Length: 229
Image (tube, rainbow, N blue to C red; front, side):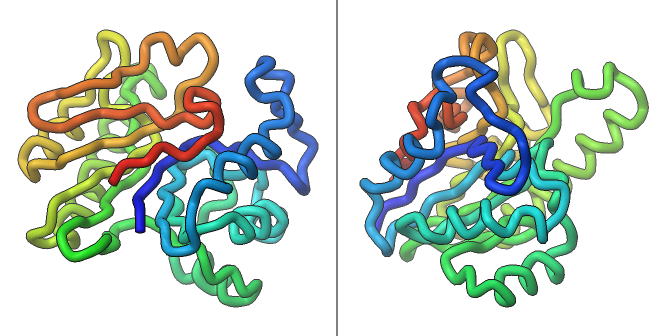
């Protein structure tokens, strides 16, 4: 059993959103995802770090989830900024059950145990730059920090592995509210996505305090899930 991560699948089986307009890396990206996941075994776990589907609601996202459910391994999904289909846990869980998507779970104010010693924790995160410094910005980051801490507490005494959509470090930018939690809870690894094309040049891959940061945006890793453990 291995633990993997990848972000930004940007699926659009039921919507008109071809991704190849965003550069050659996205050409036939669904085929690349299928090939990338072929390395996973059925008992492996892959965390999908947001921006899963361009759908506007769960019904519209059904075919995208059917594709995900058909990929090898167990998949744990967290929210990205483009996941407008995201709703309450009760409604999303009912959607999975109604469609028989048994390999998919959601990471939201909770944690999942991996093996005997590890906990999978996470939330969407936030960039201050998203709202240009207005009051809404502070409210959003405080809410996301609270959600992350709730997830970290749910992980108990196990080693913590955190998965975000927004990176807490990017170029000269840092998100102290998130980074302080990673330090306080002695998080081993933090994976994030969100960055594409030219912005990948400023992705932070390395150590901050005692946490290893890895950018797992789909186009940044060739649409092959990154092995974490």
